[in-house]
Length: 486
Image (cartoon, rainbow, N blue to C red):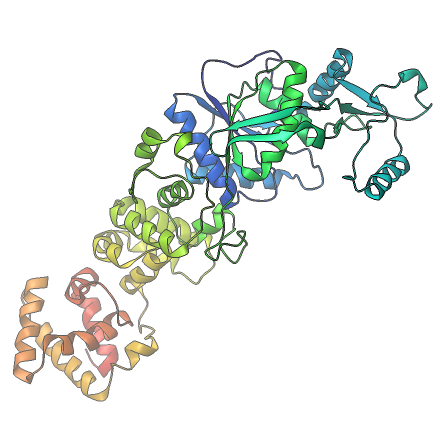
């Protein structure tokens, strides 16, 4: 699936066209924070008439699996985020990363370090004893390579500047200044010839022509180190936007209890991709007070300078409300397809065969069901009364309405309905009103047990509309189940 031998220009520099990238690590799924980063990178590229590239940062071979890559790609596709070209494997570009590391040595901006683990440990201990940060002390920075011990495979370290400032001019964080003296000569190539993350990212972004990097603000300190590599190679530093991480409703770092799940989990919970795009866009970006906007509108309005500096809080209630809006706005054909796909995917006891066999009836019912549902699961649940097998399963609240008296009224209703010439909502409505008046009852007193008998619930679309949807025969049969005859 991933391309490892893609021919990328090694000296592409920055093109006039905007190029963003989404570069996830394949950890098993596309988590919600990554989905938002992808959305922002995608929206900005679209807004600028540019490209978004996809790079899978799969250098951690123990955690990187083909299944994890598939989950990432599927998550992006479901969310409706496309990318240009083929996904690129970072691991597959290790030779190129090594080439640049050795080029930096040749240029005098990096060097071979032969320190053993024991020597590094001793450096850290000495630094701690002197109340200094425990880091590498530059021992091999200016030594003659002729002093290298025999048989030791070296690492390559970058020569970090010893003084001055490293400035990250960020679209979200503003001007962020790092003191060079606080950086050590970090490793860019390990002794086995594999690159470190810090180095691989810079080489890949340069070769891919990336002009704008949008990522979480947990990478802000990485930016300073990466700028050291850019400067050493004489490459232009891409523009950057480090967005605050998503927090839970309580302000704590987002966890699984808050909603830190993969996007496939949201699909399985019955959220629509358009709703999730809308909601994620509002987590850290806004356009005035607009709560609902189409993806096209988001692309039209999107700018990096409108990204928020404060952390966004994940709120399931708001997500449900937005999802409910999109369910109400969706076409019935689209919703039916999503309902069927969801019912088939989940082992929740849904009557998939009934949903398939009653497609026309479900489509006819959806305009009545859509205002009552905030998720696709609720839609499926609401629709089940249409094709439920007799006798219906009556829930506890509905059972409470089916008293001896109400069952007697249901028998009277059946007698009246059996004689109707037309099976339409107006005809049924008129007949029920006549019956209510004859018994001195309000229409609602008839409708409540009627709904319980016909749907097994206390909530449904208009009960007369339900009767027309399921038809005269099914209506009479369900009524008969409650008083013994039809």
